[in-house]
Image (tube, rainbow over all chains, first blue to last red; front, side):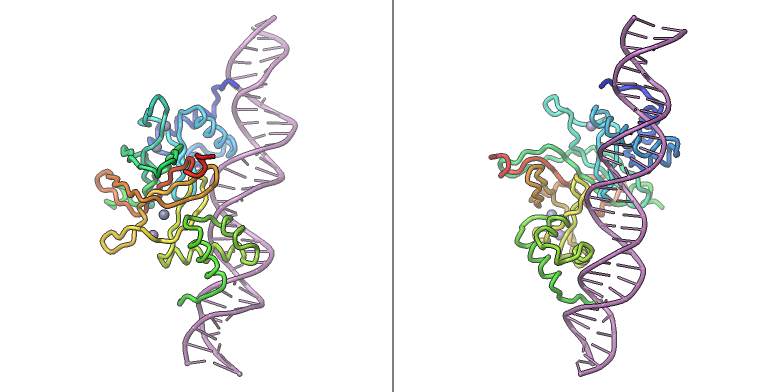
Length: 128
Length: 128
DNA sequence: ATTTTAATGCGACTATGTTGCAATAATACA
DNA sequence: TGTATTATTGCAACATAGTCGCATTAAAAT
Ligand SMILES: [Mn+2]
Ligand SMILES: [Mn+2]
Ligand SMILES: [Zn+2]
Ligand SMILES: [Zn+2]
């Protein structure tokens, strides 16, 4: 089950890196063109997530977005993604924010995943 | 454009109220049976949201959940839903939590919607 | 009772994401 | 370098969630 370095993989990773934010399948598809198949993009992204290089955000539009893991927290040696995201409703950009709010859960509840998205208008689009 | 009181509407509202939490379409469908059509359920729920009786949560499973508005905040006379939700990965229950974290956004950013979901194991399922 | 039109049921449709399978190509190894 | 192994790909089919057009039904207004 060793991972191989492939064309698709490199291109997708590069696209995610240069974007700086989180990308959905269709954002990637339009960046990369039709050379790479839809299923391949999804499979590559899922592998990236499994390997912990990338985290998945579920937007309030119901779509999956993928972002390179950069400032993700290290909670007792475990990689966590408990930061908030912002999705601009005008330009579509999705980005990772710095804030990692502490939520206290009811007694006996165990948190495994965080998915926090604020949507609105980003700085660039506010100016317009 | 006045709303009418219908059978479907009453049943769906009752189901939401007695559940106490947030329900997805398929949860409602299995509660109500096939007497009410799928499209109708969605349309009724969307109307409830428009009318501000119910709010919509996008789960980290990508599905829409709907909850009666009860402890939603009143921010300068505007109804807001900036509270966190919890989805149990074992029993599927989705509930509104009390916490309403203050997130500070980058300069120039405007927040319009909050969608915050923590998933994990709820109190009931932890005991098992 | 009659009219008006909001709401419903049904089917078709879109969108997002996954999976099976044969073909391809990245790696390991002789 | 040449060959064998198998991870990855492309394609098609599938699954699921949600929406929409349209004819029919049934609230509510008169
Ligand atoms: Mn991460
Ligand atoms: Mn509310
Ligand atoms: Zn992030
Ligand atoms: Zn809620």
